[in-house]
Length: 92
Image (cartoon, rainbow, N blue to C red; front, side, top):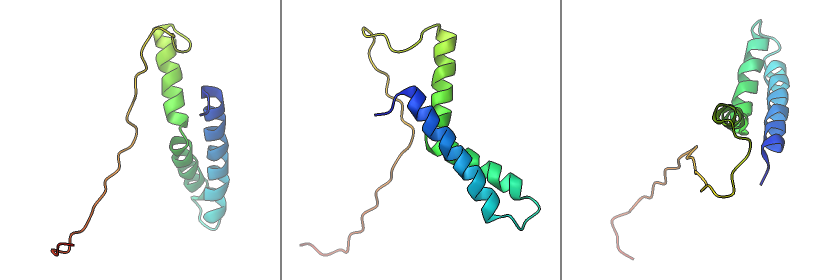
């Protein structure tokens, strides 16, 4: 499990790679830089950068830095998964 600083570094690296990828992929278009910015934002969010920024902001507002060992851990749901199974109508 990555700590906060490592998670943010990974997300920032992904954003830089996304910026380069988006720009190079659309380099013939006059809006290539905007495509790069959108790709960078998508990858930053996907690799947990936005969650880390929000957690840091929440801790700054609370006046705490890091988890208190006496507190319980709050689990946040960040994505959902839907599983679809198909039944054929025959048993066995």
